[in-house]
Image (cartoon, one colour):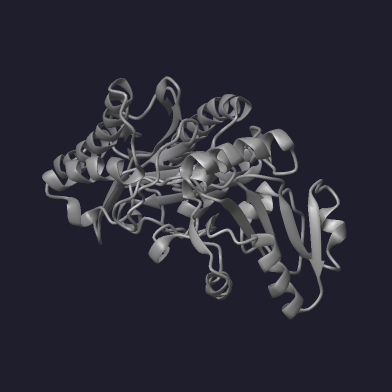
Length: 398
């Protein structure tokens, strides 16, 4: 990444090559007031307030159609600009931009199966279909030209992952210290400490955390903010934390599990072993696929992890996808590991990053999750952090 902007002729040529290979006549970006963050990033735009259409054709030079008052926002654009003032003029000139092309990639997702990709309003699609355009999903193009990590981002992510892990371990130690003193922290207090530590240790962008004791963790997105329940003796403790080092950096995002005790109850151990086993099954599937030269689609990894949990009779309690894309957004625009919430059949192209985070959530009892990150590189899956969790952490052992 950072996203390849379309104001550079070499970058445009790479996109055009991919379009021709896919049999697509062009990539049409629609943008209006931030509705399409992919277009905003790839076109290098700041704030705009009127509708624009930008075509990267498979052959020929790019062209953009903008409102007459928006030229300042496009002063970086080296290609042809056509402007309009009224809606009638916009529609007629849009036909000029399209130039009779039929099959155009856009940020659409059939049946909205991938919401992070589905950014074009239905009215615009109606307008284009009336002009004879067949919009097709730009999903794999977005993965390659927007969500792939640069070498610099990968290197920074490796360091970020170790920082995230260190903050998590220190947070567990802090929770244990307060529990020993019979002065337990509230979940929200510990979460606030984590956010402050992430910023203090060079991870200031979008730093955040979810902290939950066992029964509260049964809600996967439980967030007490500044309050919550006491992190006291005997409680299971889930810490989910994430951040990035800079505005153009990619995220590191991890979840760790502990118990404020000196032993793990049998049922909890069974649940933990199942979650960890599903995580490892996903990693093993990626490795074997790489070694066998097989392509992988997002839903396939979800099937492997979910199947592991299903086989151990906890399937009904795994209520979210296995993993999400990660880039400059925490839930990025690349392929997710998902065949539950959606069927994400996008390819894991070389260079994308994502989480693997299976979980089991038993209402009123406990929530357990283990989350690591993966960069799908030329040498196969690289897992971060270097040392992932093997056993439930015992915070009051001795």
